[in-house]
Image 1: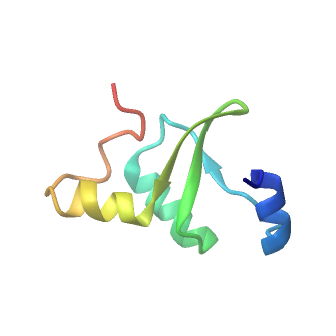
Image 2: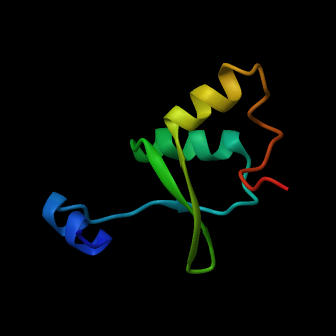
Length: 76
């Protein structure tokens, strides 16, 4: 099994984008569009607490008819 660092080095990825769990789903989607990426790491300080992707948005917001500006990434 490879480490995250090994995979990123192999893919020559220079930047990793992250967002706070207190951000809204809308803010996450907006950041993905701005950064032209398909997923963001959800981090508290330097601790990885999750990942949000365009696929998550499609399944959990669009298909279930939810609003994306109100819900936060962190589930209570």
